[in-house]
Structures are given as C-alpha cells and as structure tokens.
Image 1: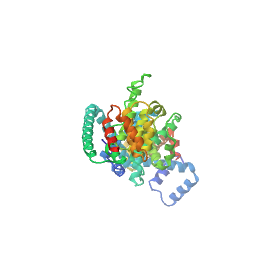
Image 2: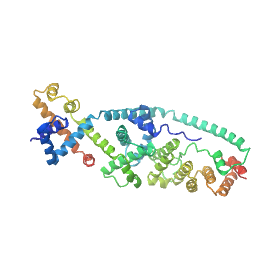
Image 3: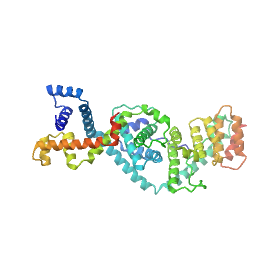
Length: 263
Length: 195
C-alpha cells in the first residue's frame, strides 16, 4: 500500500464510508499496525481541530473583544486623572458624612469593642502605594522598572477594589521574591488590611506590626481596630488608641471618641 | 468607603463564556487580563504572550462549560489565574526556562484539579490550526473543501481547474503530508500528543 493509499483509507474510515469486508479489514490493520493507528489518531485530531466551528467562533470573539478593550483603554487613559480626582473627592465627602453620623450616634450609649469596631472601621479607599517611584533613593531605577512596580501595586489594588481579598492575598504571595524583599512594609501593610477585611484580626495585627517604614498613622489605626476585634485584647487596644490620641494625626479625634466610649 | 463588589457571580461568568456574551467577556478582559499580563511579563513573558495565554485559558474553560463539565469551587478569577499560570509554566518548561521562574509549589500541585485535558486539547488544536493557516492558498482551499465542506474530489478538481480527479487526489495527499510534517516538526507536538 502506498502512502497515498494509506491516507485515503484513513480518510474513508474517518468519514464513515467504509463498510463490510473493507471495514473489518481496516480495523484489523489498525490493531496490528501501531503507526497506522497513530496516523489515524492524528488525522482525526486535525479534522476535529479544523471543524470545531463553535471553538473557532469563540476564538474570533475573544480576539475581537481584546482588540476592542485595548482600543478603549488607550482612549480612557486620557481621562483617568479626572476620574481619579472625582472618586477621591466623593470618598472624602462620604467619610465626613459618616463621621458626623457616628458622632451623633455614639453620644447616646456605651459600646462593646465589636460595636465600636463596626462603628469606626472604614476600609481604606485604596491599598495602592507609590513605592518604587518616590523611594529608592539609593538606587537609580529605570522608568521601565518603575512602571513594572507601579503595575504591581495597581494589580493588587484592583483585586482589592473588587473585594477579592483572598485573590489579592494570593497575588501578593506569588510575587517575585525580589519585590517582596524590596518592599516588605508595603506588602505587610497590604496583607494587614486584607487580613482585617477577611475577618482575621490576629493576622492583621501581626502583619501591621511588621510594617517598619511608612504608613505610620494608618498602620497604628488599623492595628488598634484589629485589637478591638480580638477577645481579651481590649486593654491592648485601649493603649493603642491612647497612643493615637496623644499626637496630631488624621485619626486623633476618632481615637479620643473611642477612648471616651470605652471608659 | 467599602470597595465595590465584583460585578458577576461565578455562574454569570460561566454562562457568559458559554454564550459568547460580549458584556461578560469584555469585563473579564478589562478586569483580569492586566493581572495576567503583569504575572507573565514578570516571568520572562511579553504582553502578546500574556494575551495568547489568557485566550487559551478562556478557550479551555469554554471547552468545559459547553459540556457542563465545570463546577467552580473557588472564585472565577482564582480559577482563571491558576490556568494561566499553569499554561505559562508549561510553556516555559518547554523552552527550558524552568529555573528562575517564580511558581509556588502549591500551584503546581493543584494542577490535578484543573481542566488539564481541555488545556492540552486547546493547545494542540491551536497548533493544528496555526499550521493549517501556514499552508499555501491552493492547499488550504483543497483541504477546506475536502475536510470541512465535504466536497468530492471530482468537484474539487473542477473548482481548482485540474485536468483530472487523479491529479486532485495527488495534490490533496501532498497538502495533507505537508500539514502533517509541519505539525510533527514543531517542538510543541511531542509534548502535546503524549498526553
């Protein structure tokens, strides 16, 4: 049998046009001839790949969506700064409104640590950091490296914004070691906030205590709140709020209020 | 202020993929492709490679959902990210770049829970289609008419302007041989066919 004849037998078999003695003979050949069986498997696979219409359509659709999203992204990058500003302004207004409501609400009764936590805890607007741009004075970093690092913080924050805290946590864990070693404080702050939002106050305290540089007032504030959530740590929480209340910082007023309610 | 919740549930994602829904697919690309790009670019890849891997992962998911074979026990993104990582890991391993790649052991161990067969099939069939597209125009026409449109050789001979059906058969055989050779000579073939 020539190669061409062999190929035609396979085609006929795959198209279901063999019958009777021809079919029996070909199937017996398949059992004896391993190369023929392999050839048949490959031809069948190729035929399937070329005729899977739904898959081919799906790939075309994915490509079209990708092209569309890429083109939208390049247009929207022009207005991103304005949107950022408006988003932050709205956040500040809501925080002020929430603060006023909390003030009037807390005038009326005393609260348990958990109730105080619920009343005063507000998740940070973002856990994105600018590290990699404004630090690293000892090393001159290329703009490509800066872009890469900023991209990383942006990815973590993106998952945070979608409330996918576990995924954000996993993403941080999967980062290259060199980044984890270079920015331990940023990473521990992010892990601390994510742990707090995932109802793991013990881990949050551990991570926030490991933040050595930056995040001073935020780190202390969220650590104090995390302590409020842990049974038996009320006194420790109180001391943490006292430290916050002792110096001027964005959380001073709220810390004083909490201390009044804890007494 | 609390961050916004994810727009879709797991079921929405899977239904959207099953139905080729533009809204769902756009959301997936907007929200998740940048994350995958970051991961792949950080691990010796390029933006283009990331897009390719991302679409392969979605195709693998589509293969499972169209047959109702997929039940997610984790967030959609976690699943998608794990498939992308595994596809990329395999690609790097194939290129002998294994050392220096950041890949937590648990990710590799979890491979068994992922749609391995759909992933391999996606890669293998993509290879076949790529090679088919590299054939000359005449070969593509002959094989398309014969394999996909099920035209008989007499009609193909006439459409191609060949003098005889016998010559058309010979050309079809040569085209198939060419396609098969290109597939077998590709480095990816052995790894994908051994599955």
